[in-house]
Length: 344
Image (cartoon, rainbow, N blue to C red; front, side, top):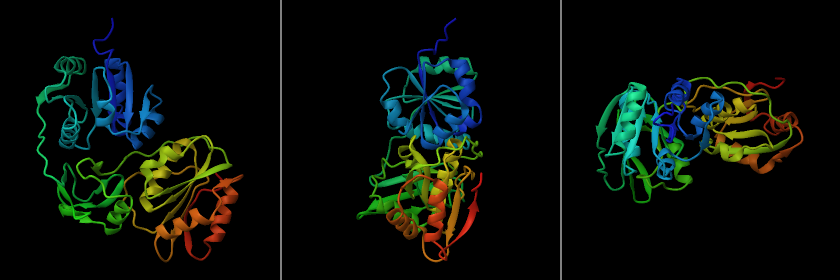
């Protein structure tokens, strides 16, 4: 018998729903026609899962807004409340939304969305069904990042801008810059890097808090040893745009960027040469492919050393190992090696 949800598109946000096994269970229960994955670290978890999905770099609201078929959002928030808040944020950008929140076992039908679909999913999963309206009120130039846990990192467009000190972080855009109003212990260098990339429209910016993934990455087979070296400078969320079959390794600049690149590339078997200066925010469980090396700058900032390397080193190489060896010679006396997985 055909499932009543066999014609739907399931859009999955975040790695947690894959890591917890939710996506596999929901595929078995709902038999969706397609499963689309939104987000960078979700893509890593999806690839590791081996499930039949299609990955996209777009945020959930963009993916859902481009779908003409019946669709639902699947999410596992770090807490049931943060999961609900995330659903409300997505729903505020759409005419209606069916949101399956696995952290609480709830199907939310936001803003008079497809109630028939919501009822079908609730029946098949045994989840509670809640019809709810999102709060669309927004102050001009102000953004609230809700559902934070004090002590965790807060991101805007992939950059860590500080540490949450309250459940709600309030940011304001004014006079051509961005500032923290409340709930945040700011990281000035993080704001600097964000603004260097361009002042974001804070109402539309991608904001989140907490680790990007909690589980360790799986190890994959070693990638090709010669080819292009991709440069990722303080924007690990752009990594998938840069890595392809011609890649031999990644030059990652920044503590968190190095950690994210190492985690993602571990599954693909791509080694990373990371340049850090010791200000990591522990946003992801570490993991690196064989051949990876991480160096810490002894004096100055990783930004300057990373930009210098990208400018002076040849980013095409016949041998990743030789490229790493020569790069270490260039940096002799200015860095110390904190991780060395060569010989793997």
